[in-house]
Image 1 (cartoon, helix red, strand yellow):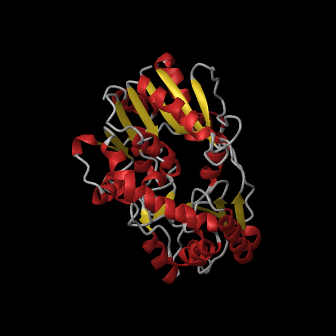
Image 2 (cartoon, rainbow, N blue to C red):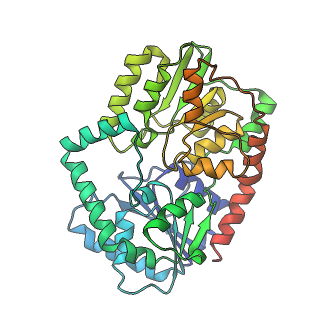
Image 3 (cartoon, rainbow, N blue to C red):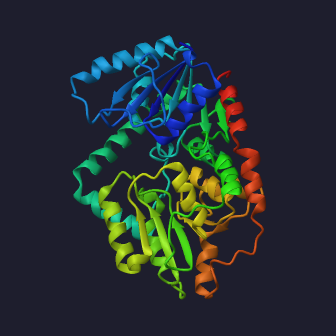
Length: 396
C-alpha cells in the first residue's frame, strides 16, 4: 500500500474520494473512515471492500475493542509509504503517539480547522456566545471532561505527535503562525494554501445556469436575504450576530442560518430560540443537510453573507460566495480575511457592518466590482489546480 488515508466520514471526504477515483490509481490508496454511524454516510461513492475500512466512533465502540482496533490500524500504518491524517483529532494523535520511534514512512497532517483550534489558545467566542457557552459548560459534565482531556492531550503528548509528523498542510499562513506560537515548526515541514476539492462543483453549476437560467430555492417574502454563518458550531457567534442584525432600521430582510451540524445541541437550540423570537418567520434555519446543487441555489439567492468567526472556518462556503460575487462581512482576526485581503480579494469587515448600521447606511449596497472575486476563485480553486496540488502531496 502506498497511501493510507485516515479521515472523517464527511462531505469533503466524499468529494476527495471521488477525486481519487477519477484522477489517480485507486489501488495505491487505502481509506480508514472514522464514522459515528454504523454505516458509511458518504454519498455518490462506489466503495469496494478492499479499498476501505470503517472505524466506528470511540464513543460508539466497546472499550474492550479499542486495543484490538488500534492494533489493526497501526498495522495498516506500518504498511503504508505515506500516511495522510485528514483532521488530527485526539484518537488519530494517540495512534501516532503510541509509536515509540518516528516511523520510516511519511506522515502528512492536513489540517481542517477545529483540529488546530482545539489545541492553540485562541478566543473563538464573542461576548454573548461566550456567556452562553460558559453557562452550558458549567452544567455539562461531558463538556468539562472533554476540556480536561484536551488540556491533558496538549500538555502530555501533542508536542511528541507533531515531531513525528513530516509535513503539515495549513489552509492559510495565519493558521501556521498560530500553531508556531505553541510549537516551533521547521519551515520545510509546512505546506500552505492547500484546499480540498470543493464538494460543490461550482464551475459545472455555473455553466448549467448560463444554459438553463437560475434556479431558485426560496420564494422570497422580503426584499433581501442574509446568510449567517456556515454551521451550528458556536464559533459562528450567531447570538452576537443576531443582536447586531436586530439593530438594522430597515428590517426588510430574512436571515438564512445553516445549523445542520454542530457539536453542541444546546447551543443550536438557543440560536433557534433567539432567531425565532427576534425575527419570527424572517429567520430561516437550515436544520438538515442540503445537497450540493441545492445549497448552491441558496447561496446564489442571498444578498450578503455574515461570517462572524474569529477563527478560520467555512472556507468552502466563502469560496462559493466569492465565486457568486456576493458581499461578505468577516472578522479582521480571522486568518481567512488576511489570506484574502493579501490577494486583493474584496471582502468587508464586521467593523464595517457595525459602522454602517450605526450610520443607518444600506448594508446591502454593493459599490465594489466583485467580478474580480469570481476570477480569483476560478484561477486558484478550480478542479485542475486541486488535482495538481494532490499530485504534489503524493510525491513529497
